[in-house]
Length: 260
Ligand SMILES: Nc1ncnc2c1ncn2[C@@H]1O[C@H](COP(=O)(O)OP(=O)(O)OP(=O)(O)O)[C@@H](O)[C@H]1O
Ligand SMILES: [Mg+2]
Image (cartoon, rainbow, N blue to C red; front, side):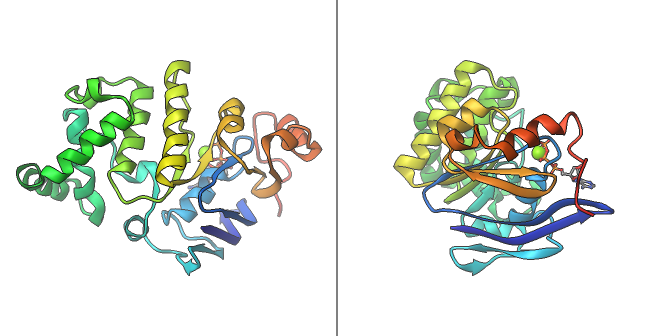
């Protein structure tokens, strides 16, 4: 579904991503792991159209999308969670869901605000959809809570809910589990699994929590120093020497050994 072909990106002298190729298959939950500074988020930014690659191409369902801006990818069903504007803390959870369809044009927050006022008046359909999303994520009891009062984990669920308000079919999640407590993490994982199974969502997930990756993802891609060094099931990767070496050898800086 998403084909990444020979993608490279340098920041000054630092080769953040070097000649990375892999495919995120339709219907998969593909993992992307690697030590800090491996280039994972940079690769996501390139796929999501936030920054252009120096080299390489990205295709979505066989169509070249290299360099397309995020809002155009949005219309093609490819979203990165934080592309959707961050939650409005003074609006309720339900309102935060309802505003998403208004934000799809890549318009300013003020513009989406104004459009939102219209939507609330006119569009029962969006209200129905928002309530369906709340039900699906089992956060109906939070519908009228101000988004600003949510815990970090609840905000991640809201984030996922916001992707459900779009016509997203491929979703890039950058560390969905970061800072989320165990209970909510289980719920988040379940929501991702159900979206995948029941709604046909394809996911690519960056995560440092290996238990979460092992539970959700197959296959898993491993990056280190900007390069793709291994891929496969989490089970096989746990015994892969290149992977162990990348994690053990990386220490606190992922820079050592970056290709010149
Ligand atoms: N905008 C930028 N300008 C300069 N250097 C950058 C920029 N973005 C990322 N880098 C550098 O590129 C390298 C890869 O960073 P990236 O954020 O992609 O790593 P990551 O794998 O997502 O790491 P983490 O797991 O810590 O999030 C790092 O050395 C980082 O410092
Ligand atoms: Mg990152």
